[in-house]
Image 1: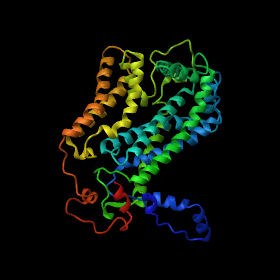
Image 2: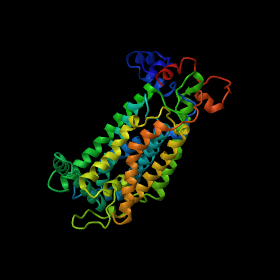
Image 3: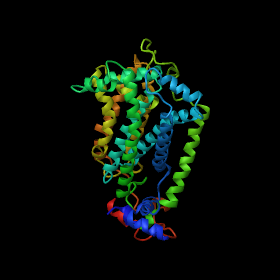
Image 4: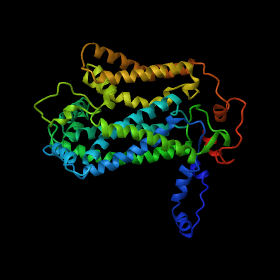
Length: 430
């Protein structure tokens, strides 16, 4: 029995509500999952990015469906159809800018979400499946974003598609077949646009499905918290609504203000000027770069002289995230109580940012050497630092309870945050 059902206190009032609830307890499920569900009382604003991500998934799907009504997925007309959306469709400029900048905001939020998970050890038992579902969502997001970037069919779209599909050919045995299936011919062209558009339309619905599983897994194990310790009593928890709900809504509104600033004041800041030039197979741009959220992995790809080696490391840099629950040997979850590993975590964070900067630079001279050093540290963090530091580090003393992290040692709250039995189920699981 999941904790969501264990904490359900919904009682329908009207005859219609009782009739419906007895046949499909949907309202009760929502109530137990998003109203009465117990959450740790020490959650900070880094824990609001899940709600921000759900909001942006909705924005991307709604604007994407609307844009698809006016888009022509053909090499001959794709660029012109985007210009038609911008100039002739009512509020088409708003839809297009919201969708393009929404992708960037989506990745800002997901990177904060990922690094928060790594910092607070949210990937550790019993939340491995919850974390793995998150990695799957991230992979689907990356595929969706790449496909979407090719659809305007400007210079950077065309050449980005050409470069990425060409490196897939380096995969042994199946590489040529994958490349041919994506191209639909012997080079990037009309069938490619059509296939990329179909996949770009399909994948967000797959993301939405995995998000449902992700939220479900969260409600089975309960939320982690900045202290990384489980809920031990009802005083450690508060109901999801109104406490977490108010915080989530406030964070979403603040993030939307940033989003609106990009849409209305800097709509093309995160894009590339070459994508406003129609695709021309005869003219190669001086410097082909992907969108900013792919730059760290692009730097890793170019750090290796061997084509296959670069492809392996680029995909490996994402897939290695999935092994974090088993590579981390520490008994303590949160970096707040891991003084040595905390230093390595911030070095890793800086390293990832530097890789992003190097990905935007030309692959020559010192930039390549710096990319190789940063790539080596990226993998060393997971394969060497995580296992060894966990074995030899002496962590700080953990607080006795979540309540103690809020009130301080030896102090008590005047009242309980949750009904006596509401937090019992998550406490058992964690």
